[in-house]
Amino acid sequence: MPKIVGIGGVFFKAADPVGLAEWYEKHLGIDDLHKSVWQQQAGATIFGPFSENTDYFGRAGQQWMINFRVDDLDGFISSLTASGITVETRTEWDSEVGRFARIHDPEGNPVELWEPTKEQPASDDITSGA
Image (cartoon, rainbow, N blue to C red; front, side):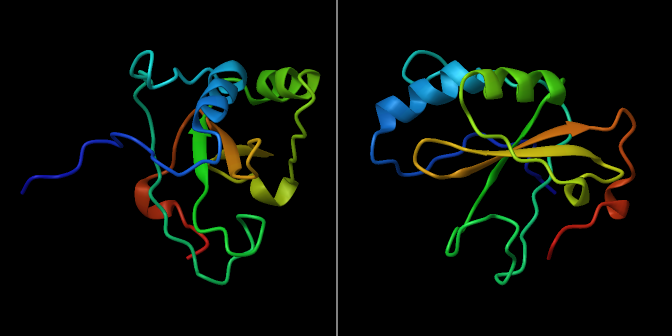
């Protein structure tokens, strides 16, 4: 049976798409789609629906949150903080799958940063807020 082999894109509406693309490129290193296609490294991706009642995403009514895999969470936190971006961490977010931090882009969208543990558990050991 054919299967999905990865995420081909994440698309969302923005009040200022050009400015938001510049922010993601400057602070998170994601190439502006009008300049080039961002090439991500191979690795784990979690596709996880959550309960409609979860408060994990932050603001009420938020329907999605993107999670980016990072290789150095502490380095990212330092860089973002130095740029004046508020970074939130909570010990309850960290687990056997890794460490997490949360920021919000200029339009208020939550962005989660995830530094996976060096050895990932089997996929059936990973649970979500579903």
